[in-house]
Amino acid sequence: MMMNSWAQIGSTVAGLMFTLATLQQFFPHQLRVSLQQFVLASLQQFSFVQKLCDNLVSFFSPYIQITFPEYSGYWSNQAFTAIETYVGALSATKASLLKGSLIKNSKALVLIRDDRKVSDEFDGVKVWWILDPSPSTSSEDKYFQLTFHRQHRDLITGPYLDHVLEQGKAIEARNKQRRLYMNNPSDNWSSYKKNLWSDIAFENPATFQTIAMDPKKKEEIINDLVSFIKAKEYYMKLGKPWKRGYLLYGPPGTGKSTMIAAMANLLNYDIYDLELTTVKNNTELRKLLTETSSKSIIAIEDIDCSLDVTGERRKERSKSNEKDQKNPVNENTSKVTLSGLLNFIDGTWSACGTGRIFVFTTNHINKLDPALTRRGRMDMHIELSYCSFEAFKMLAKNYLDLDSHELFEKIGILLKETEMTPADVAENLMPKREKKDPDSCLKSLIQALEDAKEKAKPKAEKEKTKEERGKKFYASLIKKRWLFQA
Ligand SMILES: Nc1ncnc2c1ncn2[C@@H]1O[C@H](COP(=O)(O)OP(=O)(O)OP(=O)(O)O)[C@@H](O)[C@H]1O
Ligand SMILES: [Mg+2]
Image 1 (cartoon, rainbow, N blue to C red):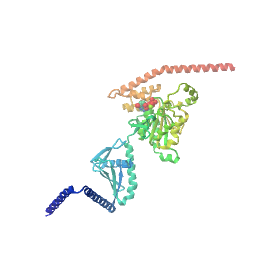
Image 2: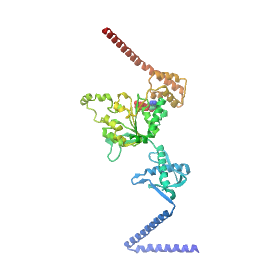
Image 3: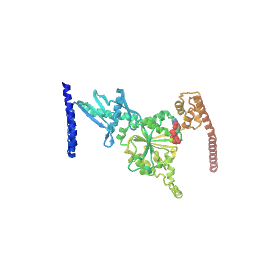
Image 4: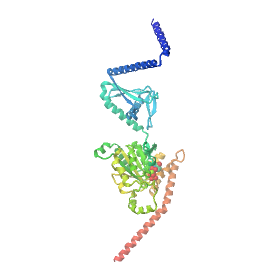
């Protein structure tokens, strides 16, 4: 009976459609357009009714939904990224069917349930997250929808969302792929695109653990860095910009650049490697500074070579000016001045970002202008020196996995008698073959130390005879004076 009536309805509709299609051919064009418009308007009315129904349902529904779109206007919504990371972490622990995606500047995959839904609990209250559309569709307009019961509105819109954003950002920071920035010459800066810096992924694995130096000094530096990054409120209370300066000095190959990398890895900071010689003037320097991000390391290596910042050179500047006129300098030479650099470190502009660390390196600390090295400007002076026995033991542990060895004592004596950089010691300890052979590595180091000692001998002897000659000369002077006075 039922089947019969359905069949009847079906054939009536089919008949009507056929008749309509046939009649349409005889309708004038204008009438056809009006018919189409009528059908469209009815459909729109239908969607309006549907919207109305949706609103009615949500009015009476005990649940609230909040939507977080991926983009707000042209800008990416940072809340979406943090939620994506947070929900990804939730999914990874709760679901077995996941879809992985790599988000910008992250070195870790974000995993989202392929069926888009994941529940969470906060203070005993259950909430649901849905990613719309699902990760398997290629649609661009993605958004997260959070659903929760009306009675928990305050808890969810307040503490819960704060928790989600905070956790999401913390996971993001842990997964963040650090970047190494290098300043572009100003000739390549374009006015519409901010391309003052070029960047690449920072992948230097150096850590404080692998740096060979006095353990106490190392601990002091680590504590200083760690307490600095936690001290934002303290700096605010003091009314001081939240930044810190480190001056690393010592001979080539003692680990200055390695320490900058270790600092970045410890703090999870990006590095801005500022090449001063390509910066034409103080204005450019200021522009570069304003384009660096907060919580980053700004490194200027070999500061004495990059700029006229040595005290001696300053005194002699007027004299050399005359010479310069005879031998005009290259037009591309940087005109960044010492005062420009000082302003860069602690002028008004230096406070435009927070949590910044300035690191300068030099091979000749005593050549630097005192204005640059004074405390407060460079908060900590760190000397990296020739390899001590303590430093050697760290290198032996890192390179050969050795805590002790019968040859250590001999090496200790030789290290006291020579000046060998950790870079050279490390080079000798590096196994030359695939299979580690600690004996031959230590022997090759002993050989290198003995060679260095031998090489240094004539120099040491020359110094000694010079010193003795000087002593004799002064003794004779004193004697003559005594005779004269007598
Ligand atoms: N203190 C150290 N601990 C561990 N490794 C070190 C140390 N010093 C140097 N090295 C090794 O030597 C190499 C060169 O060191 P690095 O570039 O850090 O020296 P530097 O002090 O910056 O030299 P320069 O003054 O020439 O720039 C590094 O790749 C590292 O492997
Ligand atoms: Mg270096």
